Length: 99
Image (cartoon, rainbow, N blue to C red; front, side, top):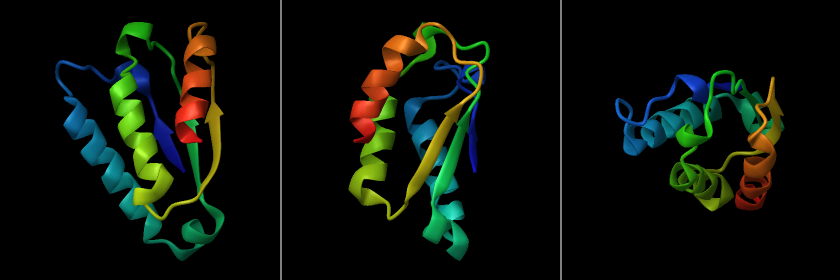
């Protein structure tokens, strides 16, 4: 399970490359487990305190490209706890990017 809290990410102090590097590390650490390779990874997102201005479309594209062919990982589910209102507009884009 991978926990994502976008409300605590700051674009100024956390550049896009650092976030992507941390994402790759999490995926590679998860892939070391044989059971995770078989069943897949569950992403749990808690967007509490997040704002539309924190949404980085380019970073989302970079992460989804990793899922779609670069990393041999199965994505089992994405769960979003307490979704903010603006997520209704963002989530269709994310679904398209994830394929």
